[in-house]
Length: 281
Image 1 (cartoon, one colour):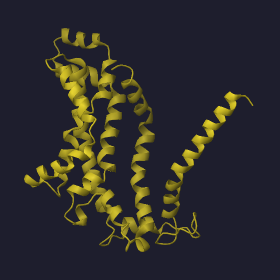
Image 2 (tube, helix red, strand yellow):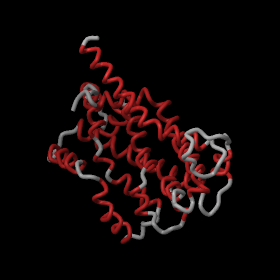
Image 3 (cartoon, rainbow, N blue to C red):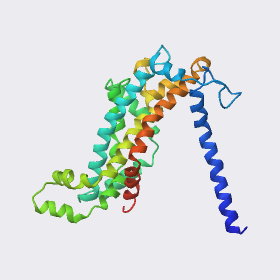
Image 4 (cartoon, rainbow, N blue to C red):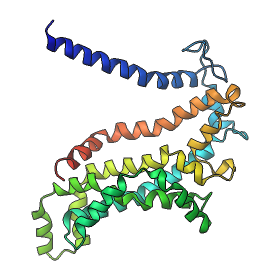
């Protein structure tokens, strides 16, 4: 074998090992969710008995510990409203930065990029006390406001996509007497379906998968206020694992289903949005 073939084989071997390491916990979670027992079984990878009981109990047999339908509803409401507001902010900011020229534009762009370099958790304590001062802790409205408030800073990918839209189309609209708003809604947005889909999915995923911020804000101990992430994490309490671990796995599978369906249906536009936004800065 040539050196090139050996190098390619080693690369593929490394990728295969990494894939196995990454996929194994997911496969174990899925097969455990279909197991016929309640707790964690570390003696066998695949269960001896199979059952749909864990999914039924998670969905239809709520108790003081497991209230998955309520958590799912809370998370879905927060994610949908955050998605709508964040998508609007990102698209409008991206259009303004890409297609309009105004004083301080470059300084604003540089400041936004610099702020994005700081980890989000650094501001969580400050955000918590701000929400507390206006009585918005333990509130889904407060979470929606915070998730959406800084979304406009993530304009770079959408701006790159808007940069690829020919300027002549907007100039023709201006000559016909169209305002900036009408140009945005009737000319630019219809041509921007890929980046809209990308922004929608990205905005939806933030609250859907978040745990740390939700745990800080929703800290009253009232389980009916929790999101899915907090509720499932609570099932991993040492005293609850023998009874609820398989239901935790079933809940994890159910949480992943909407995201999986969303990606499968929108994959084409999602990829186009990413690649389109990387063509031009």
